[in-house]
Image (cartoon, rainbow, N blue to C red; front, side, top):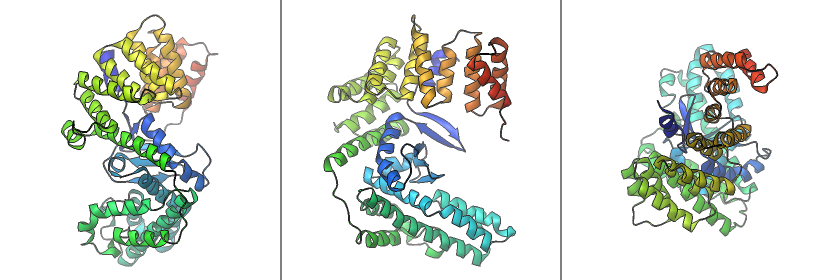
Length: 439
């Protein structure tokens, strides 16, 4: 495959990376807004500034979860469907409620006290359902489980959900956010699930039914004092939220679905954004460029529209224009590793005097804050063939992709070419000494 073809695949704004049988989407615009939205909730939960990390899961489920207390995983299905930034905040507040409540630790303790060794497989099934919020996920594992123990565990996980809802409302209140967003979420969930839930025995599922949760949070909210909301801030965040929803739909849905949701009669920024992205994906670059220029003319200080323009011009083969657009994006948003990497890729492809040196500078800066496989792959392209530094960068690329064989092969090649005093030589040794987990 030619370098051009490889770059055409890798330069897309959405770079999906395998992670435990799911794909994560890396996008500066989406991650930045969600981080801003959940920051007050994290503070209310006594999580230190900068410790809560956002991960976007490429999956259409209406779902989110928190792992380890500091990693928030939000599904694209939730982002595309949830109605407002406040509703998203409520979902995250609920998930942090699980963390505050110590529910996973309590679940483990309960399993130990109520289940013997023969029941542990069934317990794992329930754990999966709690973690995923999907009763079908653990259904096969639960088949044939002992009735008394199963009912006890299901009741326990239903109690967890009620407690997490209550704690989520408390977090929203402490963060001076409107907890009524919980009502919005549950009303939307009820629209989706009411027909199914009407046929469900509440004692046979691990979550309380949505109608019950809606009733509970209404009673809880009636007894809390709600802070006055900043309407200007809410309006700004809502507009930004509509843009990231449009971006996801533009990238992830087919063109017919995009036009159904955002017909040409809709002249709002989010609709133009979704259509420009869909047109780019479909190869209609002229229309994509026209739409993006319209967005830039309306919003000359929004870095992400220049980022999109850089991608479009690159696909045209207009490298100078692509570089200019990405440079403008970085001028407006200097600390953006993904945009730095995208610009570096275009510079490597253009290959004018000084381009590779600038690309190396950009990728090294990106790696300091976000060491992705793509950044290392791009860094490798900035060195000449036979340069040990290129072999080291490729070793790091394969290391991050958990490819032990290739990582070690490139690390050995690097050490044969590099001086033993160089950082790349030492880092290559670290890869060779690494204890790899069993696959």
